[in-house]
Length: 339
Ligand code: 3EB
Image (cartoon, rainbow, N blue to C red; front, side, top):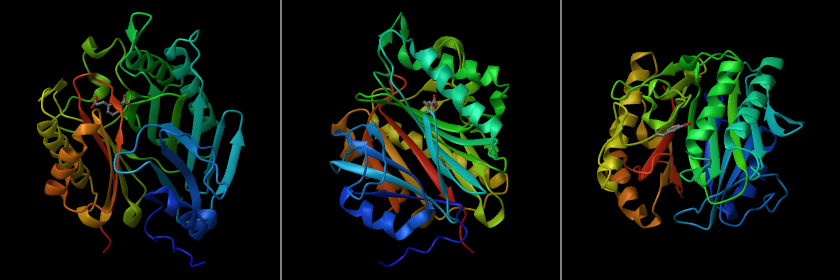
């Protein structure tokens, strides 16, 4: 079998793959595979070849299922401890957690437990810098015990940041989306070297949102610039049609998509001001797109192609977004332009 050479300048690389392509790619990457996440409505525990998969129950638009595969440019060692599985090497660690959210547990308790586990792991080990966190859980906009579940989640997450003395300004890049069922699923990237937090001048920092969006602000940065020199990688949080702290264009998925792409460009521009090399959108960008209503898929994709051209890595999921008036959210990873 042909081996896929590691991209020498990429500490982590990302591919979005259809189910029929994932096993060949995993074989080609061998011991450099650090994290495999699966999406779709029919959960699977492993790929066909037996590689464990962290499953997120969200429909894939343009396919039945899809896989997100993270590799490193150096071999990783697999890790398992209690509720966390993962893989890492001397530079990076990917961790995966799933928490059943029984009716008797408030989601804020579950989120507190989850993030406490993450911070304890980070403080014990060699990877003290949380770079990027992905959060998925069902019924994100549902009201439970008089509180929207996203807001409950934000309370528990915030409490963990306080207990483990994390400054909110150092929050990782993140996203939080509604799955169709299953547990609270969290996966994260941590690194040995610190990242640089990037904010968007068009938006108030999420950790400073006024409390009309919930009693505790979400703890995330707009982006994290990770790794040094040629390996610089920008992890852009879930980005939406928000200006200041307010949702704009609540009734138009097309305008929301355009505003979101302007916000993504603004975040990249801020990173460039802080020393990131300009990005070649066609070859150095991966986009993961969430649309609230599946029927908006074609319109959203059309606008992305119009604005950004043929993005090499792109996946579109149907998911609920954490504000009821948001119809689309887009996250991105940008690698430094090869010279
Ligand atoms: C926003 O900008 C849209 O709670 O982790 C984006 C990214 C959003 C991350 C999170 C929420 C989160 O506020 C929502």
